[in-house]
Length: 179
Image (cartoon, rainbow, N blue to C red; front, side):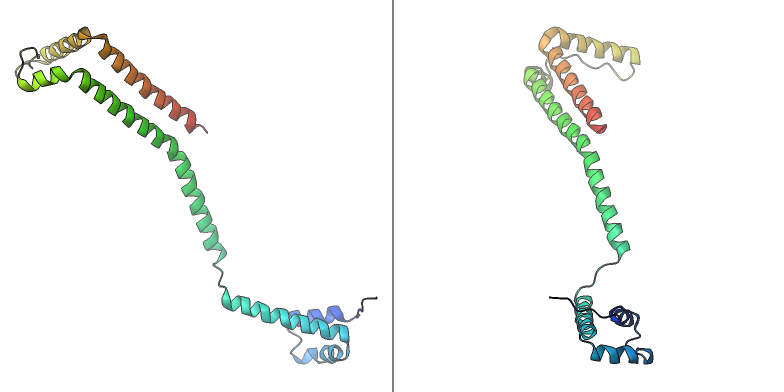
């Protein structure tokens, strides 16, 4: 079977696309299309496609390209912010966890001393008077700190472990920040 062709088929398509079809310049091409089977099919298909296009345009209102671009940029920026904040949030949660764990450990370990302090025990180092200088304040502070270390090596171990875990959390943040 041989496909029929017409030499003026492209002229019919051009007239339909340019709008000459309905004007006075398209009268000759309209007469040809009415007489030619190939060109009349082209006109029929073009009319059906234009009706479909009109239906689609009436039903679907697409947003402008600028709005779509702006929303895509906004979504990309938000995703980048979330990726950048993940290591910070992780380090923050780890610091909170280890801080609470350290505070709990200190509370359990020093509970008798806290009870003595609340009860006014004589074993607690008293603060110097307000008229005392900074030297006496620092002397009392370092004396109580030394006594705290002297009571048990567990305190020093607990503080060291807390400092190590805090540094570990910051190191993990620095490593993940580079990615």
